[in-house]
Image 1 (tube, rainbow, N blue to C red):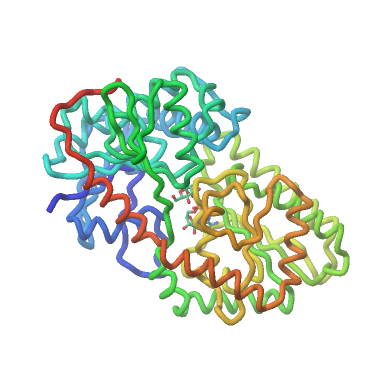
Image 2 (cartoon, helix red, strand yellow; image 1 turned 135 degrees about the vertical axis):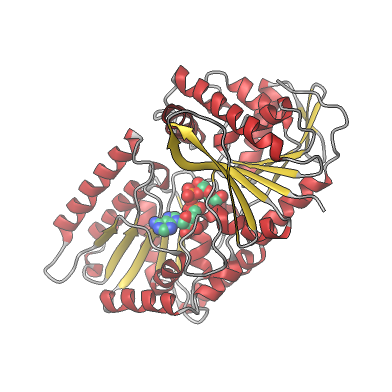
Length: 468
Ligand code: ADQ
């Protein structure tokens, strides 16, 4: 049986199946599969070193081998904080106004991808299959081919793929996209991102798309498909039975007294639409004085990417806006927004989700958004809450029974909150049931098996031709 080699920017070793474990999403998503395939997970340790040596730190725990490398400060600035998070992340979330194009970012990105390839290539055996993750490592396929690998190599993009007319604002966009032709399979979260990718290939690369979804550019053929990521449903179902979840549930219910709880859970990121959500909630409070003292919005948003200026700026704006809304509406015994800047582990989050009457998940653009699926998975079947979801989240195509809103519209958010608060139990149950069935069926196991089976199914390359 082939081994599975997973390569991602960061590696966080999976720590067993403890529902209380606060571990990265990808760790949970891939843990079981890495065990099953005697796999190896390679990536950056998160640590810095004075001089890059390529020294690999191997670690084996709980059936999984991780191999990590340290990067230089300049690498982290240019590749991670720079090209990945100041250029690609905003551009791929349709924010060309925030995207920064700096020559040093591009060269740092190429350099680190090259360092990844040179370091991991000797660890890969001819029959291994290789799965590369996300926008930090788009050109890694080409780098691995240049290092001589003929293995089956797949790439999965966790974030949206932008429309062609936005992508062409990226200097050297063609070079970046051409490098993807060295993969054997490219996976996207939903049809919209896949369509945008095909549109680019047709119009900018002069390629064609076969009926079976194969992309053909000159002599190169690559499969591209849609593989929506799901939640670890089994873990969530177990978590809702745990003491830790129950404690979190009780804590929120008791402190809310008899108020209706609206919950938002996000990394603090401008793409998540938290600012627009606060404005929408403010509109609701303006329009519905009868609900004052009857509702509260719990927004959990731990800061992320603190070294990037736009993240500091959004944090300051949210501090100010939440303060203004609370200042404008609060009473001695009621504060309309509880804004919490720390993270909680999944078991605690499950308790908070279950105790909340509404999940308000309104990203401006999101590859998938797993919080929306976790909210559905954690509900009480006899008294489920209502999900209000942005139509611009990848998950909206699977969760059509949520109240779908335009996250830029204060009015739509306000109306949806009102509709959710007034929704009869029958309708809540009906909407929740159909979403729950899809979250249960199309879970993380379904996602990773779908992708890996498709990758195993592609024809192995006999003769190596490098695309770019
Ligand atoms: P993220 O942008 O990080 O991921 P998301 O899918 O919402 O977004 O969350 C990933 C995980 O982080 C979830 O398991 C969630 O519980 C956890 N999380 C989020 N906010 C949290 C908080 N405030 N406290 C504690 N935990 C929190 C990227 C893409 C997404 C895509 C995922 C997976 O941007 O669109 O769904 O990858 O592919």
